[in-house]
Image 1 (cartoon, rainbow, N blue to C red):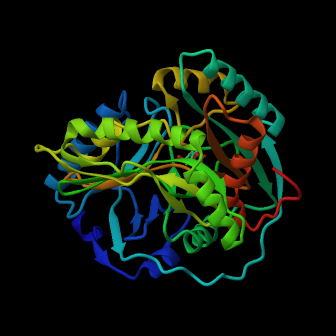
Image 2 (cartoon, rainbow, N blue to C red):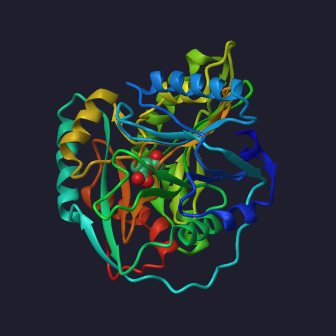
Length: 401
Ligand SMILES: C=C(O[C@@H]1C=C(C(=O)O)C=C[C@H]1O)C(=O)O
């Protein structure tokens, strides 16, 4: 078997992106490196929850190493409801390279899609209004509600092309493509689904004893004009509603990591993070792990789902999402990433993404709801969050989404 395992190779990031094919299990690009995984050495069996899954993953990685795999890593995606089966595997070969440079705008002929909001924007606004009523009645302080756009094209979506355009436009984020095989991954047309996106949000990374998380919450759409964006950024940094929405998340992440750490540093106030389409309040939280250090997926288990995608308190928010979200989140707002046999890795929150299957694509976007949220602003915010994917598809919607 060793002759088919190439292990870590050094390759230029652009070549990895050009090499990615729709049947590959995993592609992942960050501001620091690019990773392409090929083939399947082993699939990770399901586990009861994320803590158990982190143990199963570690056992599989140690076994692969004992059996001679030169560089076993686990790659893939975990659903929002982490008790449901994840889609994780150890690939046969993995290539790492440096970061991708921002690409030239490639010329391509955008596909035409029929676009259907699910639920309708007004139904989403009604769900937000209901969440605001429940928050004001007490029992919870924040819940994240989401909606989707269902797109149908004339032919199968060109996943490598879509990934390339996402990666070129989002070099500061985390661009990914994770093949969703097995349960839930095969649709009626027989094609396997792929989760494709460009997330701005790092759930957790570990390198040696260094741990990092970068929770986001509190958002504004970018305008296309630098002066106007500066004004919106200042407004966001001064907004009591958004600062509250953010603090709930930053505090929960610090509390989740602290028991694993010897030292932990969290900023007193958030900074602004710019994506190609959005502005977010961002907290860069860093720590040094206590030994024996937990592996990255175990750290993720202490954080997921954060109030950035669920709410606070977590159990009440999770329950309310089940009642008010009009669709099944599947892998949206779950985890995407990788980890190695030494416990290092990176898991990002599966946001600004779509599940692509044959001719169909489902885009997802959510927003944090607090006591003084306005339903129509949340429709606009989720509409703006769809732009990451819509821009990469080349779809210019007529009117508001
Ligand atoms: C839920 C999403 O985004 C999350 C929610 C945010 C907010 O409510 O301000 C900001 C960033 C993300 O943590 C999404 O993009 O779908």
